[in-house]
Every structure is written in structure tokens, then in C-alpha cells.
Image (cartoon, rainbow, N blue to C red; front, side, top):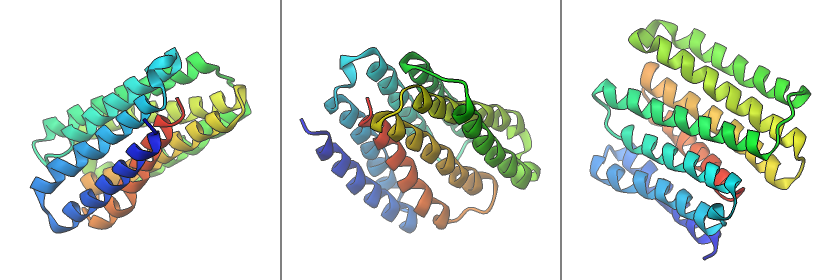
Length: 213
């Protein structure tokens, strides 16, 4: 089946999710968020993820991220948020493993990726430090993992230049940026505006991962 069909399904589900977020309709959120996440998994399968080891590892990352999406649906208790962070961190780990398997150059590109994502993480930690509370250590660890993931994606692009590796680097950068909206919504000022740009960016990034297997 054509992956584009599942990308369209993901886009439609994200539109429904944004409506649910705007109106506060939790029942609709419980439908549209898992549906959007399922759609990017199906897109990866349609793109041939099971056909290569690289694709299988990317698929594992997508599944872990989908699990994180479901765990973040409840606004409380905090244990769900922490479990969601763990699932996303494992997803990042899977993406790092895929980049290492596909070829990795620890040169200038990787250093630029690490510097950029590291600077973003430091700025976010500085802005939210007072409100992180008991989440300070988990958030620091998470920031380190996602910074390494972005660096690895750039290193993969450098080692295997081409359209596929470029999409993966853009996906990694988009994923990292989308996490800013989640952190601001959870630990800063909760606002629909955070989700308005963060959710499309996140799902767009996952779809890029999905079609780059």
C-alpha cells in the first residue's frame, strides 16, 4: 500500500487532535492521538520498514514514540508523564542505533548537530529550571539523549549523504524542536499555542522517519 495514504491519515488525525486540544475534548483526544501515531507506524510498514535491519530499528523507534504519545494523553498523574518520557528516550535510543547501523561519521556535521541541540537544551533547562522540581534529573538525561540523537542524525547524513539521510536529519531536528513545546506546556505556561505548532512538527518529524526507512 502507498505510504502517502497513511501520511494523509496522520495529517487528518493531527487536525482532529488539534481540534480536541483546542476544545478540551478528552474523548476525541483519546481517539485522534493514537490514530495519528498508528498512522506513522503504518506508513513505515508501507514504505518497507520490515525489509531491512535499518528499517526495523527505525520502526522500533516509531513504536516506542507511539507508546510515549499514549502515555502522555493523561494530564496526571506525573508517573504517566515520566513513563512517557522513558518511552520517548527509548525511541531516541532506537534512532541513534539506526544511524549507527546505517553509517556514522563523527566529524563536523555531528559536532554542529550536537552544538545546536545542546544549546537548545541548555536554553530550555535554564528557562524552566525553577519549575522542573523533581523532574530535573529526568529532563537533563532526556535532553542529553535527544542531543545525541540529533548529532547522530547529522553524522549519518555526513557519512551517507543523500535524500534519505537528509530527511532523517530534518526529522531528528524537528523532533527535538517539538519537544520544546511539550516542555513549555508541562513546566512553563500551559497554552494551546504550544500544541498548535508542536504537534504538527512532532508528527511531521515522525512521518519523515517513517518514509525514510
